[in-house]
Length: 282
Image (cartoon, rainbow, N blue to C red; front, side, top):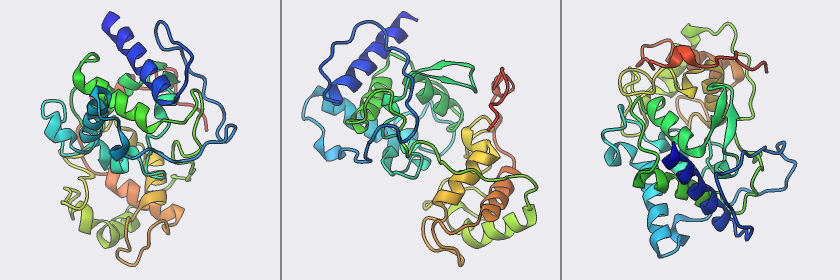
């Protein structure tokens, strides 16, 4: 526990340094209360990886960037499928509408309903490794964890602490009741299979979306509402099968997501403990 608290302090100090703040920090990172979306004027302008300082901090930031893109290669014992962080967080979390991580270091620590507890940025890294990548956590005091933290602090530069950036989350609400699996199957084969495989196994152009090499059932993407919102905003990435990027209807996003999630995928052992106080009412 002591090493975790110390690491949180390092992460918080890094975020402050990289945000050009001068106020000193002492002790564990304080709980941040995000302001309502849009209440603070912020712009989406993450710094380039080519602009990192040429020192030890820069080395850590670049390692964090590499870990985002080549997670399986760099953490072979901690990733249990063929996904990387960038499979969901496009271009190492720097694409505005694709689950961007820009500003995330300004939001955490934060209470999360799924765990009914305060989660730190480091907690979230390990939760993604265990769920989205169906793998194992990395030590909180490891070089890799520090690199993840430094990288996310770097791309959050200029975002004030406590600010909830307007691009965070999908900001899309879709009625996912009564999906039509037949229509979902048709749309998948027409506009998704070329990149994700006819059997969801993935190809060099796109990650696996079901089966042993995909995310497990404890991942956020295994929730129909979240997947449908992601698909609605981001898929397909290029014109495919008569569908253009960002042009899917709510019903199409719902149906194809339900079709994908109707298939087998790895089970997360701790899933039964999720939302111990119940899911929040939207």
